[in-house]
Length: 288
DNA sequence: AATTCGTGGGG
DNA sequence: TCCCCAAGAAT
Image 1: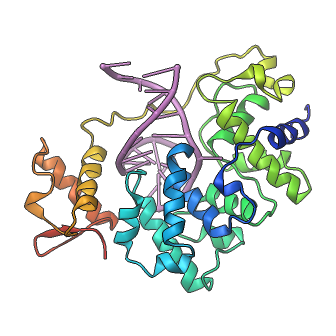
Image 2: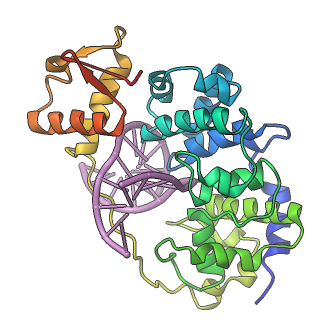
Image 3: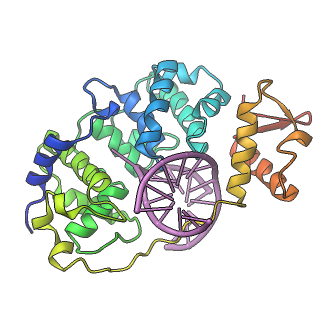
């Protein structure tokens, strides 16, 4: 197999975007918060929220000392607000189990709320410089094309970690850069819809290119329509709670104009079940 | 293993 | 206008 590491690392050193969490000395807490926000939310939307968040809560213990409601409100419109709740829980766990220091061990990281295979290794590698495979959607797409010659990756699998491990340089520092470079290539060159193969640093080593860019199919399911969905209703309820200055809305006044009353009630119930809202005394509010 | 979970910008 | 897509995790 042609070498991907050398050209990819070289390309990254020349073309990597200047992102906040890549600055020297950004800190493990900053990296962890950035990774939570980057779970399914684009870089351009994350950056301003990340800076505001870290300015308000410079250390895990600072966030842990505040109520979950404050985390959910600060999360604003980043989407998937359960991440705000989980990030708050993780801060509490870090304070209680790790003396307020973001853990370095992957298993310790995996045990924290809201942290899975990707985020645990991203923190261990990008914050602490350790040697682990970091596999996100970009990495999976880059490997699917360059190594397997497929237009799109298959469903996420534990094998993805093994595939990346097989390519990982022995040197810790170089491995970290290779992880970042692979993600970066997928983000800015080897994109899902319209890859820019004409500027790709590993085009000459790419199995997909060698095969003539075959369309090998796409196993992913189409994303459900958002308009009219339960998710939209949940989003509207939570936005109403975030925006309410008194921090408590009578249950009967929660998005009263919503066209589907049953869907509204379903949204409220599911938010309470998720711990994103409290209902008591006929009032709905963010979790204390 | 397949579903669910927000929100906004670009093609 | 839609549809696609975005540094995933939990259940």
